[in-house]
Length: 275
Image 1 (cartoon, rainbow, N blue to C red):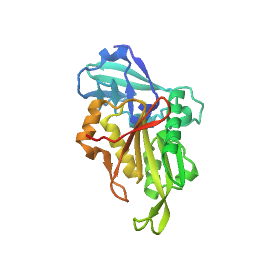
Image 2 (cartoon, one colour):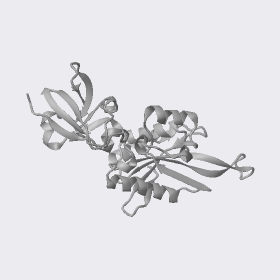
Image 3 (tube, rainbow, N blue to C red):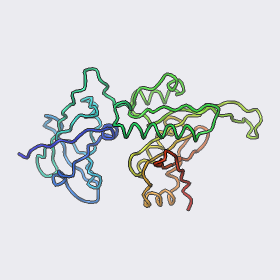
Image 4 (cartoon, rainbow, N blue to C red):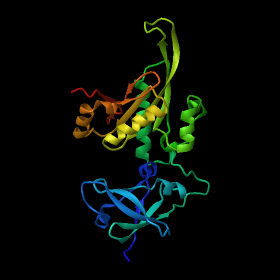
């Protein structure tokens, strides 16, 4: 029987239901350019389940329900043992967080680097968005939001947060003056929702789809996708050649995801994706 090894559970694995495989243990997993199906036995189960492993990113997916069942937290460890070729057993070693601690990771429990990133982007967005009133909160990982923000959500959006336990990294709204005739006549104030997904990695195509989903679920007039890393050129080419990836449905009409890079000076550099 092969020895087991440990993988730390951090904020992104909890949010997306995967575990990062340390480089020194990659020989225990299949290699190749494509996503591979492997078999996993959770805890003491005698029945294996098919999950996905991405060799290029060193990530084992399909752990969302297992994390939830164990009320996994930041700081826990996934213990992995290879049972055979492409077959593994996973156990969760829970950290010594005080009883009653939150099962869902909130911004207060993020490492300082991630807390600074979310808060920095929130501050930069607040400065960029124009309106009579702009209000934003860091809401990563389904964390608790203020009553002020809750009251800005419609029934469907509130239901999504409470049942799915997922939310954008930043949420809020802007109060804008909108004309009912389109010519500045009969102007009235309108509350428009804002969502932002923030990445500490180069943007991927999947990230656009995540921003689209949140934009539609929360009926957000403004849906931002922001990274502190440059966008890979191949992703940029894909977006330029498939512009539909940027668009999502909104009750006021079709909208476009707004992409920006958050630079080291704490400012947002927006991308227009023109040919």
